[in-house]
Every structure is written in C-alpha cells, then in structure tokens.
View: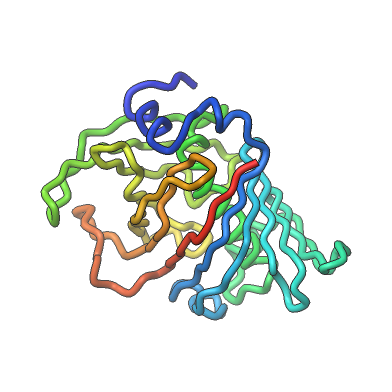
Length: 243
C-alpha cells in the first residue's frame, strides 16, 4: 500500500522505516496481566515474559511459558508449548476458534491470545504496510480531558492476519506517537469495546520508539475512555532489543 500522510509520520516517529525493513527479530522483556483474564478463568496477576516477534512473518515466541519453564510458540492459527529442551509438549491448530469458543481457557488458548496481541503491538505501525492492510485517516478527535486534538487512522486488516478485530482505530498525538487504539477483542466478546492507552514513550537503544506502559479500559459510546476503571489488561515494557 502507498505510505503517506499520518501513516508516514507515525512510521517516522516510531523509528527509521529503512532500519525496520532490515530487522529479522524484535525482542522485548515485559510484564502483563489484567482482570479480563479472569473471565476465561486465568489468573489476572501480572506475569514476566520475554517475547521475540518476527517483523517479516506471523510468529512470536514467549518464554518462560508453561509449567516447566519452556516456551510458547505462536505461528498464526497454530500454537505449541515446548519444553526447555525444545520438545513439543502440547500443540493445537485452529487456535483462534478454540479460544473464542471456550469459556475456560487452557494454556494453549492463553498462548494464542498473548502471541497475536504482542505480535501486533510490537509490529505497529509498520504492520500497516503489509499487503491487504488498508488505512484511512479520519477527522481528528479532541481529547476532552486535555483538549488536545488526536489524529486518527482507521485500519482494516485482512482475514489472514490475526488481530483483535478486522477494523480498529489508532490515535496519534502531535508528535505522531501512538497514544491509543480502540477495538473489540473478539476472542473474548464481540460486544465489548476497549480503549488501549499507550503511555511513557521511550527511544530504546535499538533506535525504536515504543510505549513503556499499556493499559486497556472500557470505552464509552462517545469515544471517551473510562480512565478511572480498573485495567482490563495492563503491560509494562522493560527492555527492547532488535536484530
């Protein structure tokens, strides 16, 4: 797709697009959890992970993952849990449908959710240049709390890319940093929309600019996030490296 306007500014704000095109791996050390997990009978407590995502294919690896300190491998609609020695312990195809259709999640369902979510977050906004992704700039939205206008990009994802929902709206500040995204996490429910707030932007040693704190809260119909509400999901990035 052609890159212009707001998308071009967002790419430049996040890092040099030419450098991104040379990357083969992005590695982040983080903590994440949230009350939304309790709806699938998973502990909402924050968990520490190292995640490695590919900027060139749908793939994410999380470790430690599983009871024996192994790793979880997400490759689109297939997930597997490996032992520390690299042996496959559990695996599943059709991972999205299984997670969406089950009230109680097992470790493979949880792995699918973490895998696709982190793969999306760490690849944004460069993911918007992938074939089949369509972007349209919307009218700015003025934050009633700060009065600052936020530029918005409506992004439509093709069916083969795993993400929260097909159409999402991304908000950018006056520096073109991503500060919010609105979506419905269909893997949990098709009816609950959330505002995913991105704060504490930092330029890491690898040259990329990414938010250090992410928090998901309920979204009102007038597009106001319920800032006082407990976080449905929350994550803290502690380190980012690129290869």
